[in-house]
Amino acid sequence: MITVMKFGGTSVGSAEALKRVANIVANKEGEKVVVVSAMSGITNFLVSVVDNPMTDLDGILDQFAEKHLSTAAQLFEGETLEEFRTEFEARMTGLRAAIDADRDDPFYGDAVVSQGERFSSLLLAYVLRSMGHRSVALTSEDAGIVAVGQPLSGSADLLNTATGMTMKVKPLLSMGVIPIITGFYGVNAQKKPLTFGRGGSDYSAAVVANAIDADMLEIWTDVDGFMSADPRIIPDAVKIDEMNFGEAAELAYFGAKVLHPRTIEPVRLKHIPLKVKNSFRPDEPGTLIHHLRKSKNELLRSVAAKTDLSIITISSAEIAYRPAMVARIIEKIAEINVIIYSISTSLSTVAFLVHNNDVKMTLRQLNGLSGGDIERIDVKNNVALICAVGDNLLDKCGVSGDIFSAVKEAEANVEMISEGASDVSLNFVVPMNKVVEVVKILHDKYIGVIE
Ligand code: ADP
Ligand code: ASP
Ligand code: MG
Image (cartoon, rainbow, N blue to C red; front, side, top):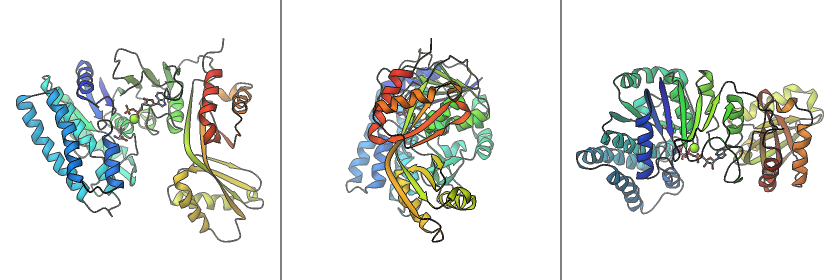
């Protein structure tokens, strides 16, 4: 039995938390591979170093070092602490080199923001060693995680990662060593770090589980499991016991931050079940996500929202009768790798839902289309897409009526509607300033089992 266990930023955010995590790992039966995020706050700090070159960099790096060293000093001592310090200094040299490198390199940001995981993985490996276990910290380079794609939004190359990890990680498992691998990034064809987007350690862990054919993936975080809504918005959100891959994938893609949007696919491909668990309350059962699950006759199971989106509407006479024109528009947007969250068409319009940050670039691309074809382009900024998931939602008579009556109650306009995968979700767009209210009303009225 091989388990991949991923621990997020708050789970490794202090000496006390790291100790708790080390006990969870040590108590796990069978072979285990651990993937970690940076200590909480560290990636944000590294992002700020990239965004605003700092004058007092030395002082700030001293603080960075002090945070990790003082944590280490609370966890182990003597020879273990000395050995830790030697490896730690080498990593600090790597961090300084990454910051001092050429800022014009397109992968400069990836190289800097991915540094935090190198330190948290080292801390956890040494805590386990101090407890008498054989453990080694591996960077994504050491472990063989291969990434492809654009800066700050890489994807894993699953086949090459599997080859690399079979050579580099599997032998450690048979020797009884616990590898602690850096989450968040892989290495691209130029041998440079390429990150998987913010929150990417969940995806790293799913990629690792896929690569080594794990039997189970455990995502350990700071809440009891996947919940019926973001508990920060809905304090009385309830924990979901079981979900299927489709439901979890839709919710993660459309804003449920508990899982990185791309976590499900690598494990679904190999039928590897996933559990979401709370590292602060390890005895709680968490949420099991797998292929099948018993239907519960619920109206809604969970609601998520993706904010900061824009609708770009292209008008052109009878565009519906000119599929080649629609294809050209989509091709143009695809050339710049902009994600389209939803598309809807009418006789004379095609509307796309994209992130606010991608609007300028998309408009520039569309301006490059041959003149005369497009009559007008309108942009509506600051909308949010709400994703409502429930059992066979779209088969149930009247469900959309119920959902939209909640939207009406919030006095919000529905700007766009689309269905999610396999009848489980209904997605619709509302103005950003109404999103919290709509989610609250939906949650209050419709989450739970129908009697
Ligand atoms: P980690 O650092 O462990 O990766 P994250 O902060 O990325 O943790 O994700 C966990 C957080 O996700 C929770 O603290 C919670 O606020 C938020 N969250 C948003 N939607 C949900 C949801 N549907 N279920 C559980 N948590 C959610
Ligand atoms: N440390 C990275 C981030 O903050 C990756 C992660 O936590 O999953 O985005
Ligand atoms: Mg996360």
